[in-house]
Length: 233
Image 1 (cartoon, helix red, strand yellow):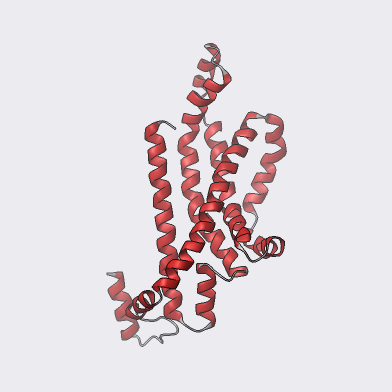
Image 2: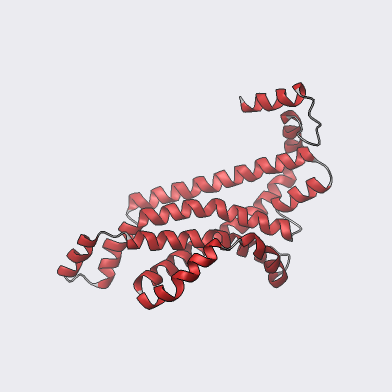
């Protein structure tokens, strides 16, 4: 329905193709440039997955450490809150200066966008562990590892999963932003190139691919979260 409205609106209102090309032209461009789009989407996907994996591992580890050590909580929690609110787009030029135009700067941008939601979700999940269950595990003198595995992990898991769900789209945004600022490959670079050449149909085709990549990666996270949940971590 939306596709039909798009096609009809462009024709009905006489919208210039450089402003909004007909959907048919976008699809033609998508097909004609499919090889380049697939290649560049793979570049971006690798950056996103690497940054996301680093964010999940590092975010969960830091969240656990902050929860377990009160001194660390007092020292680091304010910094986590401050950096969470920092406009990370502003860090993209710095990442390029420090790490160059290769994939490292884009992976780090994906990491920075995705990291803090995972940290905060982990901390929130651990803090929400029911007090009566904590007292029960203390009363039966359960070993620390057993308490962690049988109590804290199941209690925090739903929140951690939500953090990962939020982090994946942010990792995609981070990688694309990094490619905007400094890159010779990836979907972000392709979008800038299409814009510079006035190829709006190609630009929209690249945006469709970005949306498809983001949706597919989110679906993979959702499937992984359900699998982990049913297997009991």
